[in-house]
Length: 115
Image 1 (cartoon, rainbow, N blue to C red):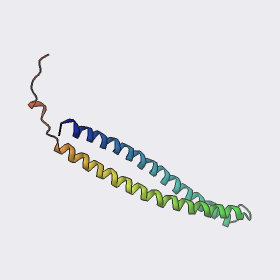
Image 2 (tube, rainbow, N blue to C red; image 1 turned 135 degrees about the vertical axis):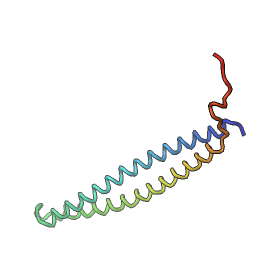
Image 3 (spheres, helix red, strand yellow; image 1 turned 90 degrees about the vertical axis):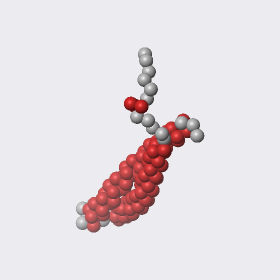
Image 4 (tube, rainbow, N blue to C red; image 1 turned 180 degrees about the vertical axis):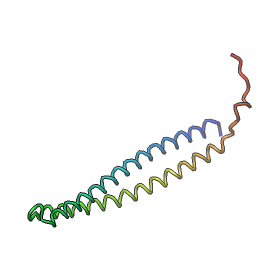
């Protein structure tokens, strides 16, 4: 095995970690949007039930759909986020093992170069 192989593999793992981190951030944004949708649906349902919108059956049905859609989206993305975070942890552990296997030398052990 040449010295470049572990370094190339480490670079690939780091690129993979960056992609997974972007995916995790997207999931976090969707989770936030889902929570907002759930809260908005509950508020709209409460306003409708209190009669502040008159007898708006459409608003009541829409609010229920908003809450249910938010719950489904939240559950799906929380699951995706957990899987992505597990993949990030595994990739970081693999990267750490590869770095640990490289025969690194201290700078003071490096040969002197004259300029």
